[in-house]
Image (cartoon, rainbow, N blue to C red; front, side, top):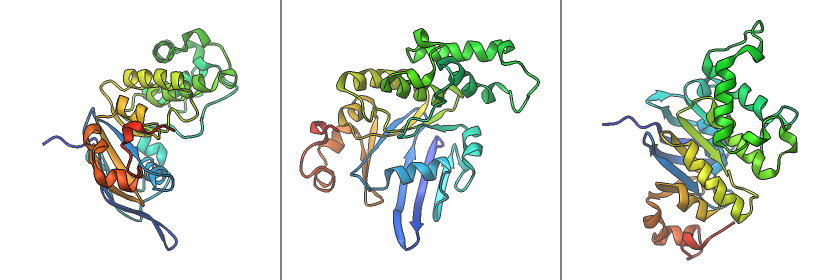
Length: 255
């Protein structure tokens, strides 16, 4: 049996007396793309924070390629092969597109806290950063300060930063939030492209994006996964329609 890339077992999280995550069980197979959907306040972002190490679970197990990561520091989890983006764009605004990506690839290439290396002399870092830059369609913006990019370009850059370090498990938190329809369509193609051969877990409200990317959809309501199945099965699931969509199939929803 294949070891799941990501495996959550009865994960719970309490803040004081409030239980936000209530016994989540979810397995994501290597190379699979899973989208998490649910109403506002369902616990989706808390779940991402638990997986990526921002919060420690109150109980339960979180396994990355069979290794327990619950409670580890985010930096440690990242170095074990998991990388995430955030709802709010998280980039170095004063650095250029190229410099942002070069920063992202350094650790994976073996450059730790080595102050004696001249960045301009690191050919492998330059080549990998440029490769990622072209893959996200920002080659023509190479020397532009990231803070001067359009919103959609900044989101594309953050996706590039997320995958640049070579992590095999990628978490994307609402990657198309705030985008127009045409920008979202381009983002879908970008996400498909940069996650080929990788495992993807994505929180997303735009159901056209979810249906365009996901192999399976996990529906979270009040801190519990009430269904996890193929997009077609989720669209036709009466419990999902009642609990999350007010009786309307998800294919019709857009935000």
